[in-house]
Amino acid sequence: MSQASASIPATSSPAALHPLPSYLQEDKLGPWGNYLQQVDRVIPHLGSLARWAETLKRPKRILIVDVPIHMDDGTVAHFEGYRVQHNVSRGPGKGGVRFHQDVTLSEVMALSAWMSVKNAAVNVPYGGAKGGIRVDPKKLSRGELERMTRRYTSEIGIIIGPNKDIPAPDVNTNEQIMAWMMDTYSMNTGSTATGVVTGKPIDLGGSLGRREATGRGVFTVGCEAAQHIGMEISGARVAVQGFGNVGGVAGKLFAAAGARVVAVQDHGGTIYREAGLDVPSLLRHVEETGSVGGFPGAEVIAKDAFWDVDCDILIPAALEQQITTANAGRIKARMIIEGANGPTTPAADDILQERNILVLPDVIANAGGVTVSYFEWVQDFSSFFWDEDEINARLVKIMKHAFAAVWGVSQDQKVSLRTATFIVACKRILHTRELRGLYP
Image (cartoon, rainbow, N blue to C red; front, side, top):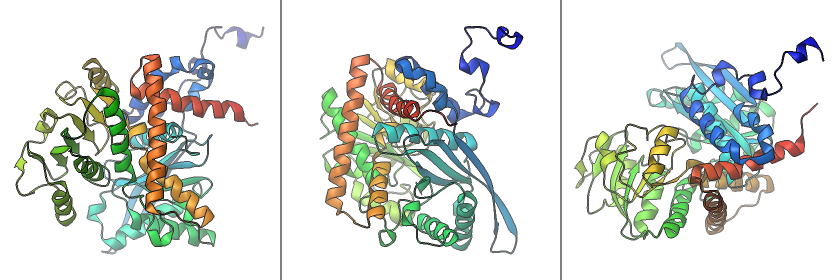
């Protein structure tokens, strides 16, 4: 034995021999650290695939770009942009792009990893990716927003593409942003590439049903879970944090099924009505004013009081890390459906489990959006488009099947639904990694 090999203890793990870089370590960055804790919890359940577990802890590719643009006043402003591809073993990267003043590399890394898990959980042929720009888009004019979007797309154009990585809308991005991204990529490559993004306008190859897909998925898995725990949706009290494309749609569908949406919170206020809010009217109010604040006939309550609302179903559909150790003990819901990505910290997860509150994790509950994004991508490649009824039926079928698989693992192995989802998804990811092997 050589001197070098003799100095390595026989019991050393790959992680010990090759420690994670500091920017990947869980004690360094918030959302990424939360994700790493979730991976650690699933490793004991991976069997022989555990030898590949380090794959889950290291993003395949991280791109940080400078995004300089001409502002309307003649100055040049610089914004920092990211695109992270966490894993592409199962297919091209897939994940949204968010424009927000609090975007960080840690956040984008975690979101890309959760996309890997989410895509594998519903078994669509994608890997996980995510992007973002640290900017408050509300402070930009339409022209500045377009120039920033196009410059960002050009900067990340070296790693995106219909068969490489397909962005989609996320926080503060929409169909128009996707149209600009698609056009910019197409101009740079010399041909129209509708499949480079999803969540596009219908006239540019977008899919019917895409805008409501995430909220519809939240509603679908919520109804499935309610059946398992004996909860009647009709008459159930629902509280929703975030009332946009996810929370608003989910709230509308639950209300249509007979539930009472008693509390809603967004960036503009927190409102409450014990008898139930008029959800269609509230949605019109939000569309007209930009917030639930000032909605007639509703009681205004303190922001922090939202977590004390007596409800059966709580839907956090805003940003990550909303449910923490500071409020998890106060929540009165029987079931939490995570419409947002990463809204619950691991420590809060433990508190909720101890209190027998069923948590439907983001990586299964909000997978409806990426599922219909997959439908859009398929339709773009075939240039054959489905009607909305067919899209919704296919979505519901996939979501129900995915939830049933996760529920079965949860019951068989006596673990939370989050851990069960990670077991199902990580086994699929790592089995593909094992089959493909390492090159060279």
